[in-house]
Length: 109
Image (cartoon, one colour):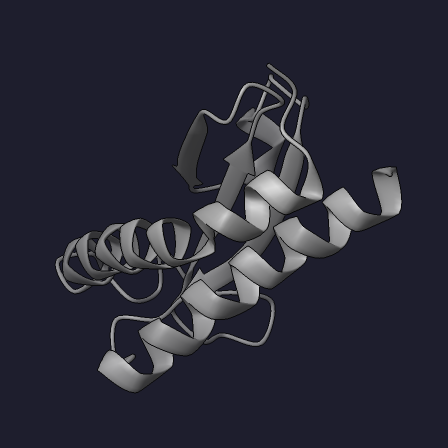
């Protein structure tokens, strides 16, 4: 089975919900780290996060430095999570990541 844009759109709510849960776990973990160790280029503590959706509909969440991602297949969305992000911010990050996946899929068709 090959995932089409229509199939991804049908999965949108599931992807957003699962991505939101993933982001919650990353935010929680980020709160335990030394802020200096996870600081971005501007000195703000954050962790890179990514959503990968494969052609068969499987999806994976990744965190940390993207240079360690060895599987580049499928459609991707990316963002970053700060230890201080609230629920509203996490929801918006999840939506943005799923939108990026949908945009990537629409460009591939």
